Figure 1: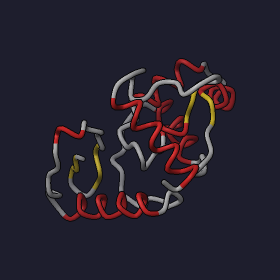
Figure 2: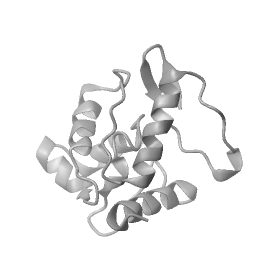
Figure 3: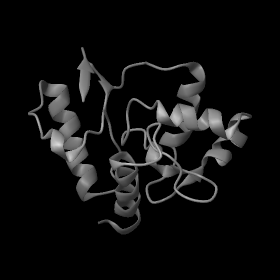
Length: 140
């Protein structure tokens, strides 16, 4: 994760091979502690100061995503209808989400299947999405 001043600027999923680093500051420590709470309780609601970033459209998509309850999903099309937009545009905004977990874009799925994750349709990031959805549905 990356912080800028008093705000969280980005969370990035890394492959397991990347290893771990200690938090670089108090805000990163707080974010790590909240991620650990989420790992125990999939209904945990993050309370972190986020950097004001993204286009107006992306922020509207992210606001809708943030309102999806743990254990539930919405399709790209569902969100697009609420926004008067297209599913592909919603997918692009999801993929550009700087704050996964905090803004739970893993809860947005395709109409018939899992869909992509972080601008990818395969590899470890899609496995992260599967695991997060399972964690929220079954507490595992």
